[in-house]
Amino acid sequence: MASSKDYLLFVLDCLSEVEGISYRRMMGEYVLYMHGKVAAFICDDRLLVKNVPAAHRVLQNPPMQKLFEGSKDMVFIEDVENMALMAELFEAIYPELPEPKPKKRRSTK
Image (cartoon, rainbow, N blue to C red; front, side, top):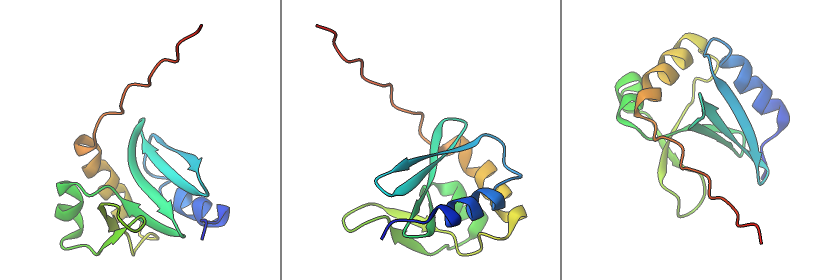
């Protein structure tokens, strides 16, 4: 089931206090970026944050879910509407997010 644009807009509204949030649609779902780093995914109208130690420090024993069968565990955000918590969470996880991988150049023949 693809995520709805309405849910994306709801999540973006809840993240309005966080600077540097952008998104990209990918196969019916959405990838959320923070200052260019992958921070979270919206999948099946669920917000799933990268599984980094800071997420566990902020949320203390958060529920874990998979993006899809066979994927790594992600932190499932139940209280998306808590804007203060969302801001705290995203600010805390940012330093622990991996740097974006360099894009491969296509050869021009």
